[in-house]
Image (cartoon, rainbow, N blue to C red; front, side, top):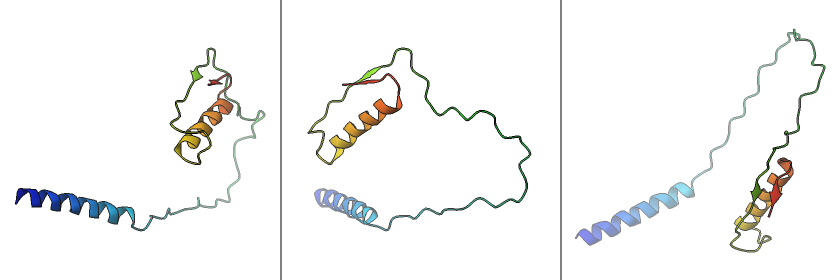
Length: 96
């Protein structure tokens, strides 16, 4: 009896997981900010905001242990692309 109850519990849990995974995806509600007609009271900035990331004094070296080829169109490629992205965004970073 106890064995049957355990099997039923596992099947019910699996069924619930399948139902929740296959359910409808929630949609994001996009709200636009209210339109104001007031004029800006602050003077315009004379210098553009700094968009470059300052260089790190001793940048780290990053390395990745990939479980497959770097162009497998899956998780491995996503990790490899992320390492290239980090190398572009962080000045002086070395990617192995």
